[in-house]
Length: 396
Image (cartoon, rainbow, N blue to C red; front, side):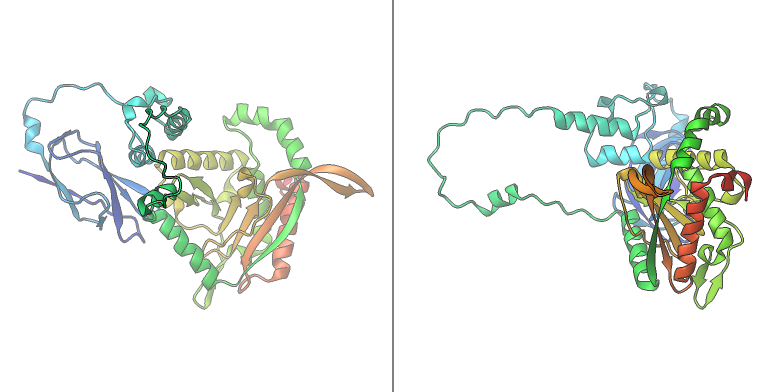
């Protein structure tokens, strides 16, 4: 008797998904819990595990098709489990969804890629290194061609011209399409403005350098800059509740909690996982939360729950060298803080020109809810907290 393989229940607010790839083919043996296929939503990639052991009897939905929750994907024959177990094969380290997608897109053989992860697991960095090595190898010299007539003055054919100017048309991933939709929504539905300031990070850098080794030894996590910015942002949000609020129709929702979104770049695009109740976390808790999100983003295991909600967002373009930008709102939030690269700059202190590590800050906000005065003062609080970190440590 066949067993139906169905699309799992999709997360709230996700209406459908795209079947990215099957990892088993008709007639293949599968073990209970083994991943059969990847489904891509506009937020995350979901796996479809085998509910029982058996033989994949029929595949109903093909790669690239759109599916909804509960839809029939395939049929499994569990009766074959009663037969003799298939010959044992050497155990292979499983690939994460993001690695499988990268391997499939580049038509690679996973067995030719050396894995650096635990138990030989292939990481995305291993695939990227392999691709770089392949591109670096010189192409074989073409065989000597027989002499031909001089065609230097002959017009090129349309095919030859197309070969010299290649193009590739590919559909947007669901995540990229969703990002595009939300960014356009933010531009059209909010009166968005951006205000700027600069912050001297000398005190933060000195404090971090002084205690980073002891911090890592005690908490088993590195002390980064983001925890300082999260703490400073929360202090500023407490003083300006409107910047932690959102608009719902003709109502303003003032949030009595601080769920901070941290923008993370992945192979599939930008995602914003949420640090829940960030005001209740210490520096170590913030750093561990961000570290966990980064790991999940790399191996494709981040969940919809990790990405849902949020009252305020921080994005750091400085890790890519950005000097200044105007970040776009993450609806329905009404503000987003943009961090940028830290650069040594000449500044005036006590009438003298000195060199200090300076970062430009940008706050984009919805002018329907936040006045310019509040936005400027909000950045001023962040600047004050970072230039005198005792404010954050002593809660004053």
